[in-house]
Image (cartoon, rainbow, N blue to C red):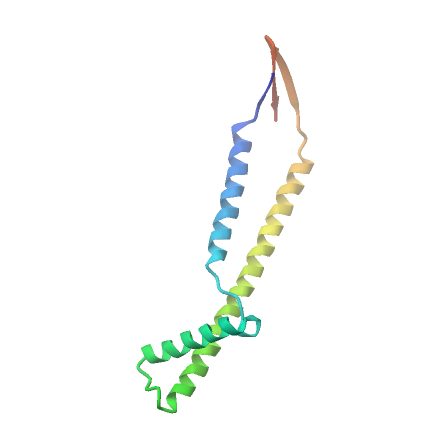
Length: 128
């Protein structure tokens, strides 16, 4: 039976990296990035109903000409927000890729020294 001892410092580095990835994934999961041109017919109808409801909630009379202006404004506002979310996701992805590349590059250049010690029927290996 072999037993491997890993320095605590490297365990925390791995955990920190996984926590950062999980937090990013959770944050990105809440961002809506689908544009109306990418939606199915049903999704587009729901999108239009949400926009219409926003205008009603703002007190716009459905029979007034102002409703057309309001729905266009709210739709453009929502599309702009989704485009911004998409750009933010792209930037976060690029940043995570750069961090992963830097991490891999740093670990490839670092010399690793391991020593093994026989203790009874087991061998303990420690790497730094």
